Image (cartoon, rainbow, N blue to C red; front, top):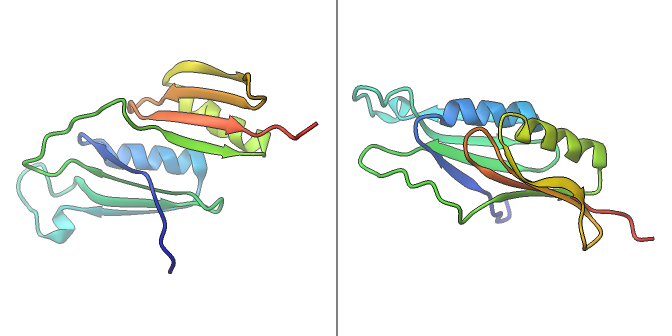
Length: 137
């Protein structure tokens, strides 16, 4: 296996719900592992997600987990997940699902660099950028 770089998102108790939502958006295979599977049986933690990995047929890999006990969950605005490509139907479908119950900060429309681009925060507060590359004219 070669090296790869993947987004890894921390959640405050909603990792299962969020990762299942992303599977509904992007398709693919979702592996979920709980803290309980790895011996953490204390109250309220056994069913929380220690590690989740979504691998899609489009080649995306998205990882996530619930913040472990003893660590503080600090959501920030210093990271976004970018999805880009040249298949408008596929990318508009992702946009519709991701922005549906979220907040749009940049509408999905043609931008000054020529591509169709939008940015939103989904219902879990994760920022997504969708860029549809336009064919050169």
